[in-house]
Length: 110
Length: 114
Image (cartoon, rainbow over all chains, first blue to last red; front, top):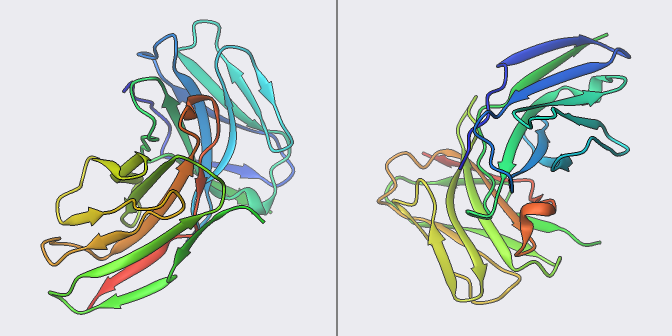
């Protein structure tokens, strides 16, 4: 499976937008880009996913580069409850299991 | 409400004993997964199953065993052969054609070997 690269940690102020980057230079044409987040001592929860076009839902937006080699998860107004580890995962036809890296630990300060 | 349930939330085991972690889902999902998470690390895949009575090893299957006798249930046994069993264990499920759908996770079982 193609791998993703994310910064280990990021920090944001409350009520500010947050842009979480992910590089996936070896992505294949059929790989979907998924984002999950994990709050402390909880199971991961789905955030958003996309293939080629930018996507929006109630939690976040996903901006996908035109060449698909990178993507950005956008939290429009960070809250303290958004402090979590965010995982960028490629999900393709080679297998159905999600392959997690270490993700980005997001700290939100008041 | 539909979801995925893991039990117990905390589990203590004496060294040398086998222990079974429960995972049940009522989402009618075909695929189920077990992951292990160590402090400060990402999730690593132990086993996964795409259909009843069939399962495949993940990246770290040694010392673990699973069964899939019912679609709703995918229990994980941590055997005495697992050298470092203390960890946070997560179960997940998804549809079989899951690349374009989300996976659902349980709240995890924290296993401590004493």
